[in-house]
Length: 101
Image (tube, rainbow, N blue to C red):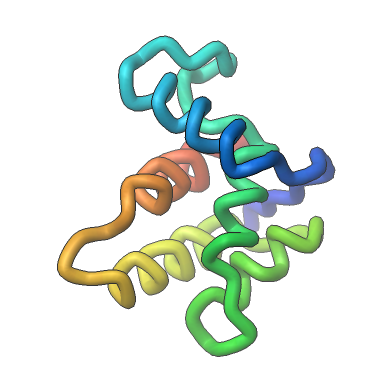
């Protein structure tokens, strides 16, 4: 079981938006060109829920270790609740989760 745990503190909305734009336009300064862990933790906090959908995002946002595959499914389920289109930040976070570790 691959787990993800983020210890970096969350960022401001402005910092998250700025990093999302660099990932989208291909100028991200992270090692893999994807979201940083701090941005992923912040997005998790935005989408967390105490219900069935979003509970792993809540755990990640709180700094707990979560199963990577289960987190991806929670991100996907959260995206489906925002239909008709996934918000871009969840798409980027899903890619981050799949490639993390």
